[in-house]
Length: 211
Image 1 (cartoon, one colour):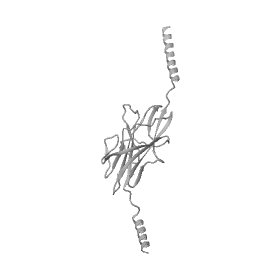
Image 2: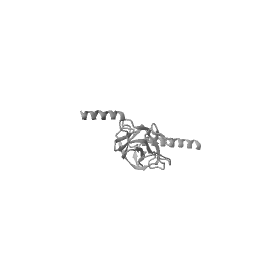
Image 3: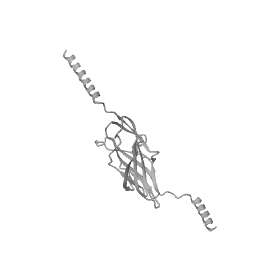
Image 4: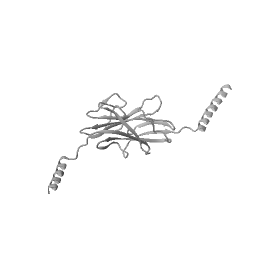
């Protein structure tokens, strides 16, 4: 009877107090894209999550640009902002990316800073409490590799590893998505005919002038 009474009291207290509050989570994420790969352009950062800033364009439904088949455009970096409190601990973070529903590729994010957190690609800071930034930069993940001519989609999501389990920002089932297009490289024969045609037009014009 005593054990039954204790069980009933425990259930009553659980119902009264409700489930334990989470002590970890994510609240913002960012993707850096280097559209000209090794070229002189600087990477463009996008915000991806529900928390957004007017300082950066949104990754969701963004057009990352038009590229030539066989070229390079890099997923340059990723940044995940996390929060923790009351004994919660974040022990690692990952970013995942893929093109057109292919296999997910994993990027390891390293601890970057406690507050204040720098919004990537800007000099502005944000955050409070025990917030942290987990980041990777300087990556050369070429999302054009193997892409055929046409429209494509780059998808990403994030995961924080915590002492309470994984905390997702986006997911494999509902990733953040942006688009880009790839144009075919002209065939050598086509290019040669085009040049020959221009030469013939020029020669004809020169002959007419001589007459």
